[in-house]
Image (cartoon, rainbow, N blue to C red; front, side, top):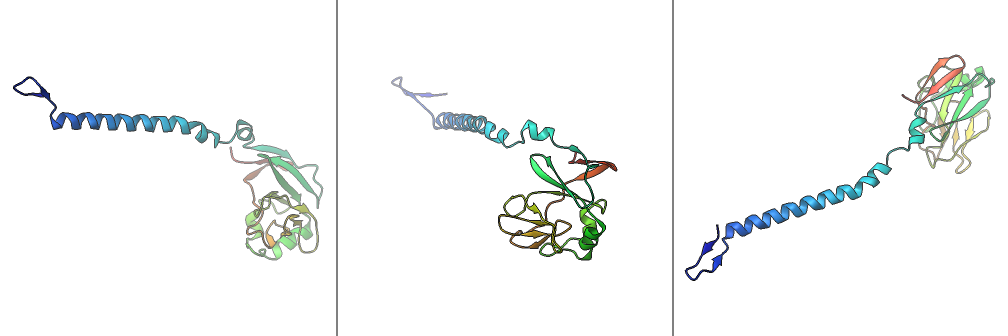
Length: 181
């Protein structure tokens, strides 16, 4: 309660002024925080994948038309997907060693030895390697000449990693499902 002097003048107490100042500070900070959150929400929401990409979370792909030694390039989530029906010679070359720069056993990269399924983007700069079968390698990146062997493992840098193996499963002998539901 304000104090009153003998002449009728009202004097504010220090406690009352402090309480008002605290209330103003807290309410200003609360409104500023709410305003920032409302302003940032559209940006945060834009970081989520689009509805089109979410609809492509899984894709079923028919592999019955892929002949031995051939590659099928499909699309999954807007990225190229390499599906190779490997010959016995390709499988033997892939199993002969564990790759170069980023070693990994072929058995860790395939569910069935005759089928190799990879994302078709180079881990270095995201370019799409060319299918170019030689004795040593199967893909060459046109941007910087990285080469990848018969299991998609990097043989020659500058690519630091192997071609990525997406999550997939065989639905039947002629169809695969790529992605996780």
